Structure formats: structure tokens, C-alpha cells
Image 1 (cartoon, rainbow, N blue to C red):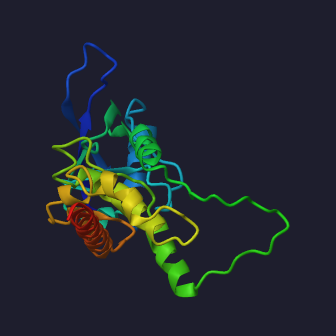
Image 2 (cartoon, rainbow, N blue to C red; image 1 turned 180 degrees about the horizontal axis):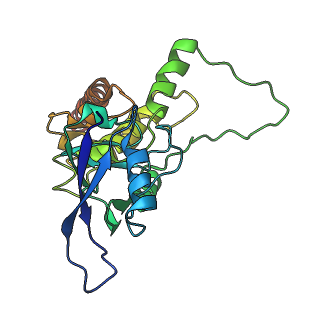
Length: 250
């Protein structure tokens, strides 16, 4: 006999002055291989068309359906109800701007991070459409690809204690993006160019090392290794700059 699942879903419309936050219960009969994305669509189609949540790709690529599932930030489309208890509590991701119910605006924050870090290749070279494509070592290309697998779902930021206390913290996504450009030979910025932005409490030294970000990342990006490398490079850069100043004034 199929399980009867109870969903306790957070409801709130911030654009309705008369709306107050509450949890609403819905019941659904479990079917084989049912994921939360499909379950929410069934609830909206058959029980409550006013329920708000986000989705696009349904394949764990767009990151839109990230939410708090029984207290853990992750993707609804990659979560099977069979892996959860009979009562499932769903809340929107914290940290981001609330749009309604389970829907939050992650786009504005990620765009801000992109602009703040100038997340594009910095080069003085002129693009030549007729030139031969420059080859890259496979190992390095794979390392860059590993960082580029981030889908900007916001799970890491929502699970980060520092980010939820200090809104200017770059977060795992920002630090991962910095590491990606640091190792890209096409980007002409050196470690000193990154130093003022990264070697602060809003940057890599704001991380307190709990690594909830890596624990909840749906793409299993090795964030601990990334942060350790960036922190080491910033320490080396700081010590090198201090040594240069001491020599100058001696």
C-alpha cells in the first residue's frame, strides 16, 4: 500500500499587506520514484493553484527549485519523497529576498556577486576571429570545469552561518568563482589584484570552516579544497607584500 505523505508548506505573500506567515498542510499519495518537484506540481494542479515555487529544467541543472527540505537546503527535483519521512516540511531558502511561499529571488544577489567580482576574463589582448584556438592542458581545463559546474542554486549560501549574519560575505559561490579565474591562464589578474577584495572578512577569511556549503552542494563541488587554495594564496600574497614594504623602508 502506498504511503500517505503530509506536506507542511510555508505560505506567505510579502506583497499582500494582509498576509501573515503560516504553514499549510497538504496530503498526497506517494507513487514510485516521486520527487518533490513533481509532488509540488501535483499539489498545485489538483489542490491549490495559489502555491508559489520555482522550477525550470527539472533536471538538477538550473538550480531554480532549491528550498529548505526538512531543514536542509537542496533541490526539490533531485529529492525523492521515498528518502524522506511521511511528514515533509518545506520552507523557502533563507538569506534571499522572499517572493512568495517557497519562491525567492536569487538572481539579484548572484548578479551583484558577478559584478562585484567582475566575473569575466580580463585580458589586454585583442580578439582575433582568424587566429587558431589556443589549447589548454587537459588537467587544467578539468580543474576550471570543476569550478564552473556551480548552478547558482543558492543552497550553499543558505546553509552558510557567516552569510546569514553578514550579507556582504562573498559566500561559497563567490569564492568558488574567484578560484576559477585565479587558475585560468587567460585571465591577466594576479593575486595582488584579488588581494583587497578576497583577503577580508567579507572574503575568504570570513569563512569559519564549518563547510555546510560543501555538505549541501547538490553538484558535490570540492569547496574545501578551493577555499584552502585561495586562503593560502592570499596569505602568501600578504606576506610577500609586507616583505616588500619592509625592504623599501629599511
